[in-house]
Length: 136
Image (tube, rainbow, N blue to C red; front, side):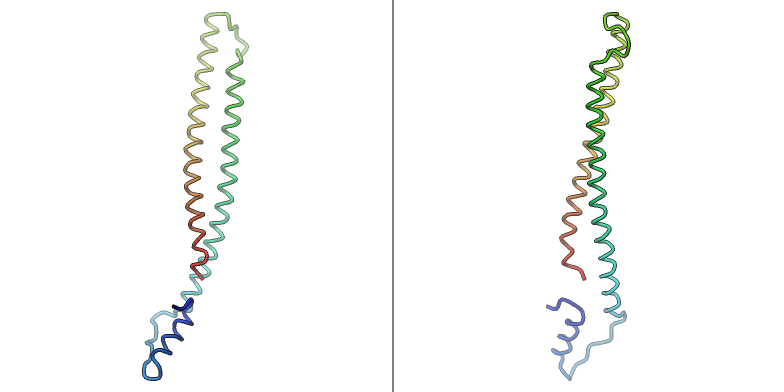
């Protein structure tokens, strides 16, 4: 089997010999193959750039989780200028701590879900890159 159109055409013409003749294609195969090669190169470049952007984005969202954890630790130990010993103030402190803990937990869960999706996308792009030798 030939690797390119020119070789395939030459081999087919050789098989036909002087008796036969290939019909003229309705579309110039060399032109469409060249366009495909150019489009594939562009797509491959975009894939490589997207892979880099995924890594950059994963790094950024990892920082969100780290910042959330660090600040949540600060919140858990803080009394917000209120008196921990006063019943009303203790309720407010506990309420604020619980509320912010819920916020950070929810945000971190969203980050985890997003990272899972990005990992799947990155795996797809890696698998897709294996096609680089198939085209052009």
